[in-house]
Image (cartoon, rainbow, N blue to C red; front, top):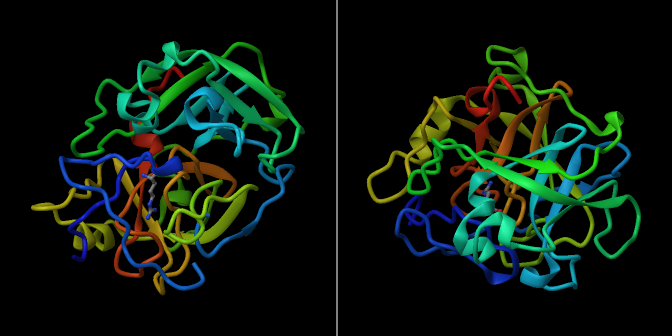
Length: 272
Ligand code: ARG
């Protein structure tokens, strides 16, 4: 079973989609498993984290949250391309009439911060839904967020990408691997892992293959801390800079199956 059944697409509200034609399943998780193994995060400490929401599509109990995103300019939010798939949204992004980014709010039940409509979505044309390579999209907001919400993006070669670097992942996703979605923002401390760790975990064949050019490997070498379903599109931050977006993994928080992130520096076009 190890590495064979890859749960790669968004799992919000049971909307689990198969990747690479495989059935999505839950893998075993560590008992104390953002985010699994995480802790509550204050939005003032991480103002660049946003929740992507559609109450029409996902229901109102968790403010319609279905993926994460990250503010990289006052009107630009990065997320995972797979968050905008037809299987997730039920149509094209512009057809989701109440599609908003919720900024400045940690508790999904609260009214802090603001909800900003999304006017445009650019999906990386090189995104490959069967391999998850290039899993990145850029959303344009109808109105600008404060400049203080913006996080810098690490360029390729930045020390933040070095293996062993401590990194924090943020999200409102499953905290157990069993569909226990968080109602408030959480964060978990992981580390950038060598590409070889994910190449070993995800060699391809029956499962999805890790590709070092466009993906980034991160996790807890002892297991227990990881992103999970519903965290997709959310940020992985190292040395104060954005290095990755939550993309996929097998199960959540298993030492032998690290989290796979979009390598933002390799996938984000220069002009954004
Ligand atoms: N694909 C998931 C999502 O859409 C994210 C899975 C991340 N899994 C992991 N073990 N790091 O929310």
